[in-house]
Image (cartoon, rainbow, N blue to C red; front, side):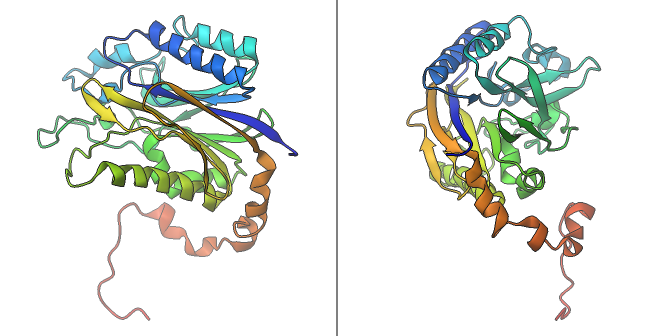
Length: 314
């Protein structure tokens, strides 16, 4: 290996409404410690790792939900995680609800280096769900109510020996997410997700279909941009709602090289070589040689589809 990296994904089991941040951070610390014992350079934690997935709960007054957000990072509750990471010499990626000094709310991930310093921040851009209570749904998914769309783009940071980027949950379903990072030479994309096992609007969609869509999105993003992907779930029965697991590490060829076995707190580790990203980036996905941006205009100039009028366009 020319650029080895020992990569860990730390899957979180369910976090209940009654669970304290301190208890949740203690669980994260235990997993980081386990990853460090296995030589990990970096640990990927999940989306909204410090609390239950609160957007499933409706509050008429949005301000009532502020208790689920972090006003600074690190803070008193999360300092033990930062201290342990610095002591063990392990970087990490962590997702949480962010409340800015200006009063803005975001679904956020941060990238922390081996010295415990925050070196990157990403705010979720593709927010799913809805913004008002919807009685037709089996359960609520109110991210559009409690979060603003991210305003930091899809940055990539050169840190800890490689080019690293982040996205969150629903972002993984959008090819633009991976391509924008791919255009910055990303070699590792870190993702956290809290994904319900049921579709609240379509009872016919099976659990296996939902798992397949998860794997499909992650594996396609890895392959089409020749990058490693590390995806961490929060899973199990949380507040009476089940979320599936399948946290995984994926190679630049789009192959799953490690996956969790259960739905509780679990750490998986893989030794990877970041130089394995070079072949795809210099052949099939050599963007400089093969991209044809003169034909991609509608991707950035329109949102919804424009249906052909039926005339012969040949």
